[in-house]
Image (tube, rainbow, N blue to C red; front, side, top):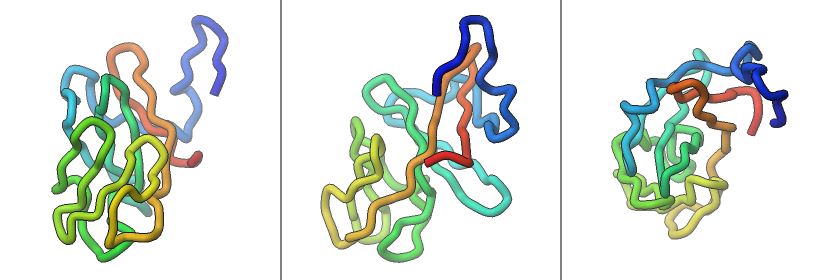
Length: 116
């Protein structure tokens, strides 16, 4: 999403605050709730990403998994997903994760839960 210089992208009601940028270290995962959905946010290769927080193979909370670079591994059956685009890197999952826009703005991490 493009924003004018000086314009805050998080004025859009679709963005939810996740944490301060300093709280999310490399290969860390943080979970946030939108009321209807669980989203997991991670920092891989220096960038922030957000995907649905429940594995598409079997119900498992991905925040309890591991992030190594951009590979998010489910803690239950060890399916691997690319956190950048939600694609399956290794089964048993065969359905990708929904992806959300994640940004860092003014020292904070925000997720747009309406876009994927």
